[in-house]
Length: 254
Image (cartoon, rainbow, N blue to C red; front, top):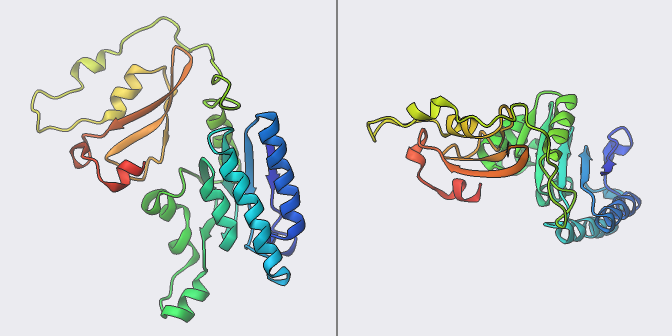
């Protein structure tokens, strides 16, 4: 994999013209090599002292995000306070994982207070609960940075290196195929009684292989990855236990 990381101890991790050159170069190398790109994001946004050069530098990164979309996996791990331009690029990548006390927003609480008079905290404005449950910008959340890195590793185990390769296959824990007896009693006789679609997923696919994506967003749909006889598969399902599984805008986006 290709990795870049922003260092918040150096000028708040602010984005500069030189930093853009480094990130753009690793983006180019990842695309040429056909390998996943992982960004460890911890930045206060554009470096104001550089003016329009910093904004132009963001454009170089954004265009590469778009060019790599659908060609190689792009994963963003938010490890700290990310604001302004520093959250545009992660939002363009395939997966966003927020870890620890991280947050992401375009303008901070001080700006909102000065413009609207409303008092908000950084967490209520752009914390993990907001982006995993309300906006849907973040796909997964982790309590610690180590747990966030572990999530990235697990996610990569379901994905191919690029769009010309197959996802990795692993040997299943229980190679003898068995249909879980719980499926026989899963759907109630009363059609007005709901059931949890996750129970069906866990019964059908390899044991403990289901990785749900966006579990807290649009609960009327269930999406994620699992394995079937060791093969990586994607899952899209209605969720009868919430809104009778009816699709709305958020579920359709998900």
